[in-house]
Image (cartoon, rainbow, N blue to C red):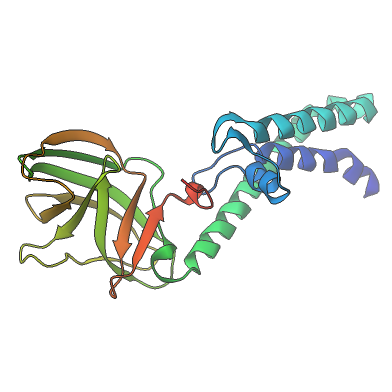
Length: 237
């Protein structure tokens, strides 16, 4: 048993070190969190620039790999397929365990914090002429990790500057619902809803297309919650 642990334990350790460098749809790299927890930077410039976590854990991976290769005997070196399969299997298990933990933690959060926006595929397209919405499309995908359904209204921003609200045809805040453990793609446009914009005058004209990284959801008491991607949680932007 001790012999097997000495032979295969380092492979599992290498898999863990390797996973520390990976960003996933449900989380930024675990190495970022580890470094920041001990007061070190994970990136050179906030959350951009050079990814220091990859450098630090890459060096650690190289050291462990070479020490392991140095000490194992020739018979073990021949059994490379088992080691490769163990490495891949370990990375997969770590990924699944981490994903499950994140989903459970988010699902147990309060209010609308149980909702996250999809990591990609969210966009807006709009045209404003003389202070009036001429064209508007706002499409995004939400996932609710809670065991309870959620009701909400929508606020958002265009180009991170122009705030808008989504109203129904009666001029009141449009209400939306997402079921428990649900995943829904919403398409908001000016044909089915009234789009009310703020902070522009009657001479204002603009247009554009962009990616939606976050939006503001209002609960039934009009309390706002900023909804972001899972992997952006814990990042101050």
